Image (cartoon, rainbow over all chains, first blue to last red; front, side, top):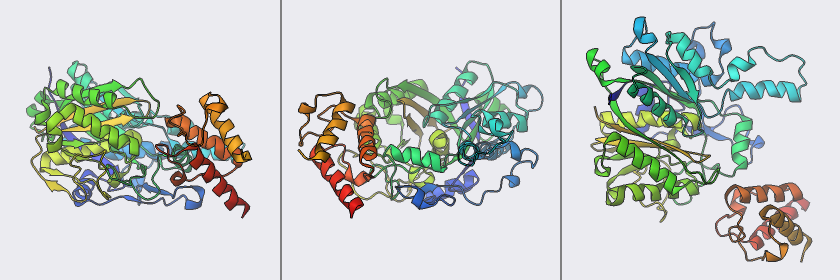
Length: 403
Length: 82
């Protein structure tokens, strides 16, 4: 089987507009959660908090002629893809263009554009509809613009599985490389979901925290939304070695499952199955893993269920794992969650630092693992799992190891 | 039975598709087979019916009883009237 390595990473979220800034914030335990700039708290029951990107000027990153075609959903993806591809040192002239895939995870779509235009239509009875509505809103736009900007002509599409979208994108990209369909893939996720309509819809499900996100802690009150994008360059080990590229990590395995149960409530069996399959696919034993970047949303149900699933898969090794949720820093970026968390996992494997779980108050008997509260920990990280468990019962886990 | 109690019982009975006689003040929504999003929908129906907001702190899906829920509705109605 062809081995797959990661040779470039790019990202943008509330913590920064490139992966060095984001990773530094993660190791320092900084949170990007704060009051949403453009939505007044009075329009929400639960306080208008989120991990929002601020001071973003698309013209710093994107050609002026392209910007009018882009919802922030695509702008973020282009920022992250640009950084990842630059870092990898790849260009797509010649044969590589057609031998490269693009797979981007998106949970929703161009929500800011959609809400803006629908408000004009329904509330203001606008007689004209902006002609670029469709191309900005469509959820495949981020993948399309990456292909156009970088001249990549291989298989290109978006996958959507709510909060597991990014991890499903990594899995799909890895499978195309393994199958010999392509030698390189640009994979990750993007989301721009901090709009009044989206916040209200999440709030109505009673899963949003009014204070902040406190994964695995007693007195946790739910999740806090985030936004942004993480995009990565995947290629065969052979290709990376042949061109002397810097290898960040090996993408060793993927595991996927569906709960076939409740539309919202998580399942221990579904989560455990995805982790077990990822280990098996990577040829890893539970004891090989040092770090799990948890789904860790901060809801009562997820964190207890995920903890039980980790016990179930790892047995007595579970207590020796560092298990952290980085969502209190970058927020829950839905379709981009797994991609932002990949930055944390690659940083941990490269620098041997595990980013902390912030906002931890006190132990919850239902969550009894080592969550590395408050402060990052220096420790050897040989291999790691990155968990994503979506509403709808769709689970995807990625296993990575040091190069 | 107060009006509020009667109306809350009716909403639960409709959502859970159970006989109204099966609902007791000390039952939890879980006991009545109303879990996950169904429970959230019951709360939404109650909010719509009485035109009130039930904050998350007032709604305990794990151990809160129908009796607690009715008290919470009465508190919100009193606040609205006050």
